[in-house]
Image (cartoon, rainbow, N blue to C red; front, side, top):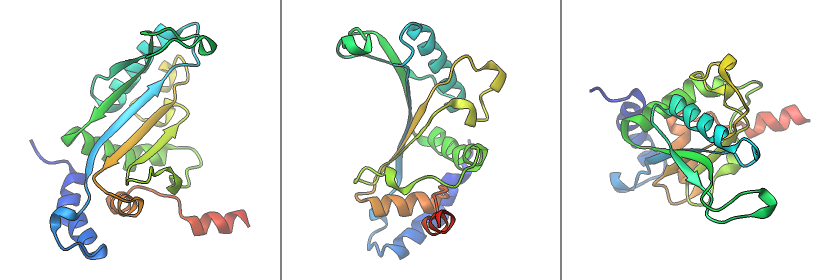
Length: 191
């Protein structure tokens, strides 16, 4: 089985670029992508939660090519009409070739498919080099047929890196081609 193109790019160009740019002394200091977690929660579908969870499982399976696991409520919360042990969402963790292929599709197909896309925000880093981004519906993914959508489902995608700081995580994802928002252009357009 051949390597994904983005993995080849990382191994052949990105590692050397980051080692030079960040002045790492050892090649093992260069951050890498550890995993990608795709998750969705259906808490707002109170009356039809079971059907919504089935839809989420099917949608995530189409998007990632991997069957997700169902998430269950840990506690009962009366205000949210949730009982302990009730299914409330689904998640999948991508590693290896699946992760690199998903990232390649996300960067080159999904992001350009977003209406009025001006780039992903820089503010979504967690302080430890990991990046999270959320989307209000599944229609941005090309694997989803628009006429088959039964309900609007939001998704969160978390890119977990081996970077220790936000700057290292930004440098890694930017070198891989992540379409981040250009702050100067955003400021010029606002003025």
